[in-house]
Amino acid sequence: MTPNHPKKKQLDATTLRKAKQLGYSDRQLAEIFGTNETKIRDLRRSLGVMPVFKTVDTCAAEFEAETPYHFSTYQEEDESVRSPRKKVIILGSGPNRIGQGIEFDYCCVHGVMAAQEEGYEAIMVNCNPETVSTDYDTADKLYFEPLTYEDVMNVIEAEKPEGVIVSFGGQTPLRLAKSLEESGVKLLGTSSEGIDIAEDRKRFGELLRRLKIPHPEFGTAYSVAEAVDVASLIGYPVLVRPSYVLGGRAMEICYNEDSLRKYMQTAVDISPDKPVLIDRFLEDAFEFDVDAIADGTDVVIGAIMEHIEEAGIHSGDSAAVIPPYMITEKCHREIRDYTIMLAKSLKVIGLMNVQFAMKDDVVYVIEVNPRASRTVPFVSKSIGLPLAKVAAKVMLGKSLRELNIDPTNNHFDHIAIKEAVFPFNRFTRVKVFLGPEMRSTGEVMGIDTSFGAAYAKSQAAAGNPLPTTGSVLFSVNENDKTPTTVQIARDFINLGFKIIATEGTSRFFTERGIQNEKILKVSEGRPHIVDYIKNGKINFIVNTPLGEEARTDEFEIGWAAIEHKVSFATTLSAASAAVKAIRSLQTDDLGVKAIQSFHSNMGKRAS
Image (cartoon, rainbow, N blue to C red; front, top):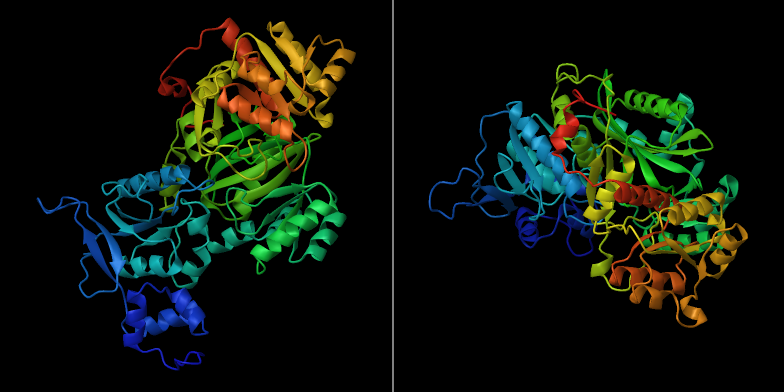
């Protein structure tokens, strides 16, 4: 090979080995020498420049380690011994960060357990030391490697597995699916074609139109002008985001052309080679998540979750309820039907997550992810069925019926609520109001036989215990001055709370017969809202900001609440849920039961 480089016409074995020892990746070398990663890889292999794997002795040489782990290096001696057993490689999620974290690691660990139960040697590839999947005694063999095509292929060539699972580690390993399959690697589960249809907005839109499944209008844009044209065609507000991101990173709701232009100028500068996705944003819609398993014949719906927060809040930041608590039978049936149709059309083998929105009694599909989702652990614990383990066995060739999973068993007589946990008290003075970009760093679960008790438990677990007496502050935007807000205020009064409100909200309440005390905003003089919070005169806050940036008063309210441990709701739906929980706290003692006792009457699965 004669790479196109002004100083070096020939990349020989000595130079290549030296470059690899210095840490240059194949992709970096391809950039330097004006070629592509595949050609560098082929050249490296033809010249015999291959990594070896060194062993980390987990027993510190006191005796022979049965569970060592390995890392690659460009030295001479290879210390990784390949066994004769049939093998499965599971790709982890890489570095833990907001949007991609321990929920995916949970799935990877269950995948390891399933492979071992089916008689395979389970090999884990991951690079984060703070995960269970990288505990040296979780998998039969652990490779501490980055989740890149080059490094994963090195492990695959060394171990020669029966197949590779890419769908348990979130978006990071999923991105490798196509390149691995093109290199002759057998992917266990959904094919790269099914993954590509779900990921490619144009192909996915064509599929939805063919199946006659409603979806919000959408388009893609590579420039500011294209974005403006797309948005004017589908109508504001629009949800915009870069391609190929997880956790809603850099996602934003634009309500007008000016905000869209500002967003696009930034987005295009960051990623000029990938389109920005533009979707019609469904205001005042309810969102739903579905986790399902398909085996090519049957589809089992693990659970349908309804978000407590309305559309526009990232699913990872929303509280979610199993089973749905505000949905018609018609919409419930459509969600199930659409999920099954999509699983079969995409030829899903293993796990699949679908996100829906419901507005005006119409169900819309938002997106489909043919992989494990961050809600899999929550659903599994709620219904008593380890979805990731079942899905792994399906990917290894078992059918759902062979595993004795009954698709028709829908018995579910308790409420499980997932609540997000936020790090706001660790990061001083950051914006505390939620939006389409994920900000939570963990989650907890409340489970009981009633919605109120389950929600109260979830809030206590998240560090936001709800008050049973005192005063509630209302400061809602113009769009939220509705009969719903009036009813929430009346409910609080009926529970014995005093209502305090900012000027506009106070006037709105007074005109509708809601007795309240008017309070000053921070910018209006003293004593103001923050003074009341600091002095313990406010016990719960309902504050619904509007627009792209929180105003100064809202910022101060949020931070005062965090610093003085006052629970607050930033959406009306969360406020309504809090009412139900407080009513339950006033009338009942929260019971404590083993989670297994909730599963005892459920059979094999529930939804």
